[in-house]
Image: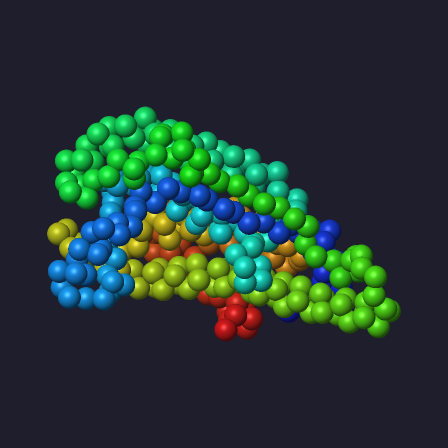
Length: 301
């Protein structure tokens, strides 16, 4: 397997096969800087005006925990379904998987919106309780109406075509145009290599864990004894999750990545319970994972 094979006009290939996506999630922090209390603290301790800053939690930490948990899970899954692109937070996915990707995000957005609505229903109660909870730090002006708070929550995915060095419109000389094309091609080529390397890094990581866990596991030998090196069900589930998103990650349409996904299926066909019980299956699975890992080590530092 040669994952570093040169692809003629990488930007041209990506323009027809990939999409650049970015996810933005807005949340109300529920916190506010209190200048009056900060000044009092600094003055009391004989400190400079900017020595310390007091930030108030306007609502209990638990009030926003549900929203924050959902947002974090969405961000994590979004990153798993995509690959890094450049250094500005953008990601890249295979264009053919966009519809499924957007459908997934719409489903997750519904969960996020439901959690926000639940918070907004309780918001008046949090405000009413704040005077007691904050004491002298309470300030009615810190609490805008619920409809204003609602505007501080949101989620959006922006999508754009991958850059194509052969398609840009600007009035420049032929020499300048060629230089611009070369710069675009170089930038896209480097970003593509980093993105593809991320796929192989993920494969390496799940295989490394599987080889390590399966080879160090020792089942209990007798009554009252405990197994050593016990592994969780996630050992297999993580591999299966990676297999599911591999189509989204194959941004260059590389058949080798499709073959790799098939190889991963061989180490994910048995549940963790089966691997714990059957020594032959456990050993065979570890050996298959090692074969894949040996391939990855040649391409991932």
